[in-house]
Image (cartoon, rainbow, N blue to C red; front, side, top):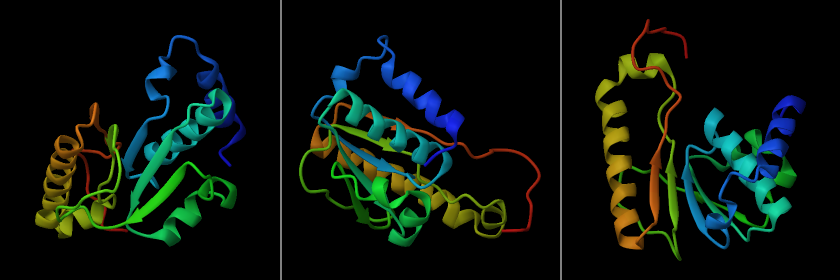
Length: 161
């Protein structure tokens, strides 16, 4: 469960009438990076909106580790019927069963020390993962693709992981 203030903000957003919630009605979202800061907050907000507004959303979450999902999401959230988990690496092409109306791509290595010691792998993960998701979006005739990141681009590299 998120902090009380974050929960209050999510409830406020879910009640907002200036958001076109009906565009999400009965849609399937594929989300990467769902165990990160932005991704997990987004998912919690979508789960709340789905429940409060009875949107009929389906959320497919691509993860590297099911154990990490259990750490980030409480049991009730992780077992929500509208959310399913697909454990896979984004570096190779793949297919997802069923419709994918929207793709939200937020997956990325997140440790600065990893960036510094593995620059090729970091860039490759970003490029190949994004390319494979864009190809999936074309194949599935997705309505929209959103790429997001909360990581720094410039700055002092720390060697601690």
